[in-house]
Length: 81
Image (cartoon, rainbow, N blue to C red; front, side, top):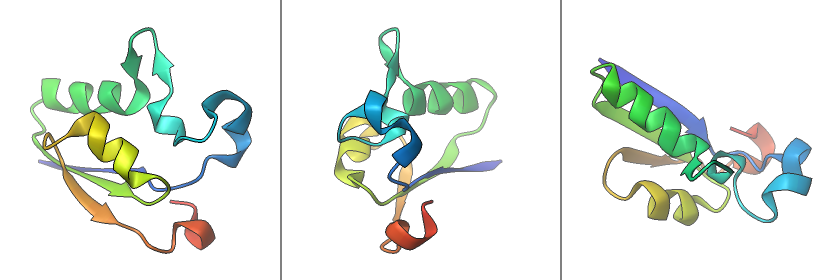
């Protein structure tokens, strides 16, 4: 089974919380939201995971390393995803 995580947007509604980083990198406890999502998918047997990145995508890549595949959305400012 495959999964796609949309994580390219700027996250304007949460800017007061996520100071200059994608909202999926907000930590709940000691784990980021995107890491929690990936861990949940893997625990359910889903190992083919692609993350769509855009805004500060390098930070998401640093968080997840090679645990997932990546697709770059260069139009994230207009599509917000």
